[in-house]
Image (cartoon, rainbow, N blue to C red):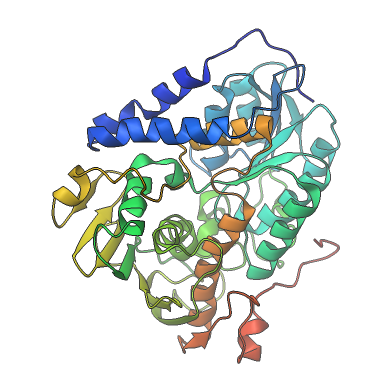
Length: 443
């Protein structure tokens, strides 16, 4: 439920503040005014639907630790706590130290929970930020939406393709606001790059390359005693039984296929997302995938994801997407008449005029958000779809899951039907679209 607050900010002032960094980021001046106009037009299309009160009560599930460990949930929640009309009222973590640390950061009246289900039963909580390891994302997201909470879920949105379908179905059924934490969509550089591509500034798009980092190799790890402050059995949750050691949990969960997908989902969920935005495949996806990769060490208690890879996706419009661990981190769009490269630090083109020359007034403009968390907060109030809703998050992370399925099957060419959302000619691959949950856990 929303609670009252006396703080009122002009929407135009918020927008100006959000795009103030555009020029400083090296983008052309014409793009700053275009970004303000685009977002103001989007907001004016439907009035903001505020209730009588404005304060939004948000809880974080899986904040992680401030010192070491997994920090994503904590960092994004700190960002949310600074938003107008937002209060962080509760934290939940199976690591007692992490929960207490986060609660201290958010204020003395912050409630602490060990079990997310008890937190979701609290009617005072309007929305949740989910910063848990990936194998928990779908379960908690679906439970939260069914409990009437809006959801900001860290990327990658799910551990499996089937989970993604279920999250999308639940979002539509419950009509909750769902934002995937693929925050590059709210970076003006990435939006500009995609608008340039979508408007033909580099000619017909031919190839896209998503350059991701190389993953680590680790193990075998020896079992270790479990701290009394850490509920390891609950941390595992739906995942298989496994020996405990520090190298399995917190930030290192990313390198085990039981909990995540390595760099292919950690960074792939960012860069493949931008690639599909530029391709215009948000509501679809590739029609085939083929892979070459190098696995981690074979044996018990070793990392199991793929540190080195080259994944080739084909799209129905003839575009090829290559995801690789080689090259400069970022996304490179190659067209018939030039290319545009974009990363978190830069945007550049083969011809500087591609960027410096303003798009025409009738150009296709993409959803304008310049602050990912603010976009989520705004959508809680106005009930619009955020920039990276569950459908977008699902389609983007599906590319990452297709890659890992392909690699686990030896890299063979797999056909994918993005409309039917299955492999039309491969029963073995279809069997890898979901995982068996441990114990009584189920969606």
